[in-house]
Image 1: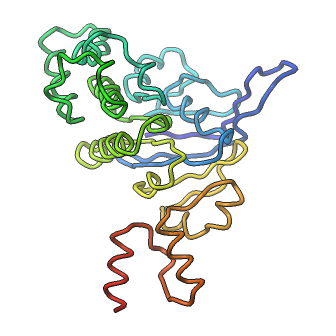
Image 2 (image 1 turned 120 degrees about the vertical axis):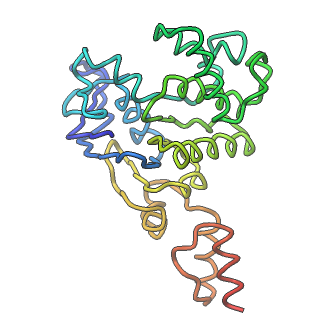
Length: 276
């Protein structure tokens, strides 16, 4: 669904204050994949995300979204419909005074008929478990609910891909759980390709695949078990590992033969029960 080839991006290119944010990124995101991108601040995560729906264009290299070259202006409208984007601050994405009007904003700009818009709004709100909130003012909602409304606004455009750029960074634990569960459900039940940028390792555990970035480069790419089996390398890049993985490592240091690929509470409980 997304193919990135030799991608470089420089802010203020050609100027004295030029900053190279991406340095030769090669990446393929497969259809139906739940890909999580992690990395320290300044690693280039958000810059990469913005290339995935042509908010930014390559300084060098190429980005293709469902086969469409982001550098071709004629592809821009179709790319934005194919790959929807959800940002960090839900308040910055609200454009209307009620939930249903906010979700309808995108389809209205597509010039759809009112009957089709109503169908899309209802379907999108149902997908994010926000039925019953149609008449609510967005400012009365919790942070997690606002992000789910933002996701519904993207879903109403019927995208094949959703790119979420640190959507839980400003939320409390309950809000983070709501947004992550929504993204995971859309991926599994509707087959939507999800690219999820985060700095919460607990969220990264839910991925099909994790890409680790540092200093504008991809430094590690693998399944959660593969990535989190290298805690020392992660710490070198300023990253943590999930708490359960930390506990497993501590138990191994105390002489217990705990498997190196335990990442969740359920897996730890299962190992304890089998070891008794």
